[in-house]
Length: 316
Image 1: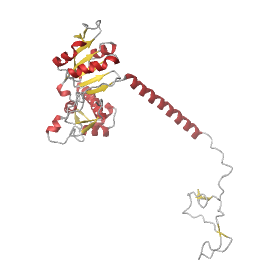
Image 2: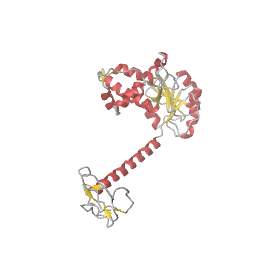
Image 3: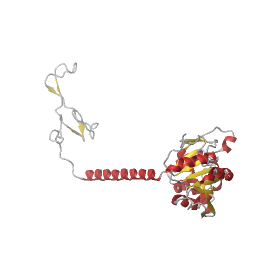
Image 4: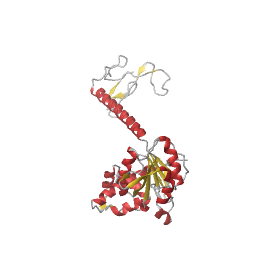
């Protein structure tokens, strides 16, 4: 079982919330593969477009949309190219049309019924979150094993006992299951979701779940995310110290010249001595010293051991 696939074929509906573009496959165009990173950014663009639509914006340029999403305009245009032709050069994107295209690609146009198991502190917070409904996800059922939780009313939903989970998923036609239980219960809950016909599972447990390939699994491990933040913070701090050290060294006094090299001497170089026979046909005799002249063609260049530096010759 593969939990997270790096890319999703467009036109193949393998899971809810993952890229789907049946419209493009029906048009006869070849299937394209949307990278997982692009899928994530499409969801971000959709959120921004929703805000723009609420504000009454009809047309948005690629630069405006990219800035609001925190990406470059070139990357945004490349991401949107997976959805087919979009926008008009010099005009921009139709907000409502682009929003509908992204919703279709992400499989949100058909809506999703969500079932959550584990109504503890995290689960209850997720159950009360109103943002899911605005993005095409409706909370259909809450389940727990704790008798103190069963029967509670949370925003109009009664918490049911987990023993009825599989049957309830089939009756509700749930497409997404959320696991917010302790780690030791995660696999058993996943098995009940599979039995209930759930297509995708969002798990807040770090446990690797054993489910059929037809079921997509996304894990959210908050501890891992904070460890990544810790790493990035340490790296940025080390980089800052390195840059500060480099600026300090650049602004300090230059080191004294090495005793072996010494400063450059201006004037002619003594040059190599040419022995008889070393330059046949030149007429140069034994013991003759050849010094290369300084001409306009060598001024400003640098030579060490037969070269010039700043118009001067450095003796070897």
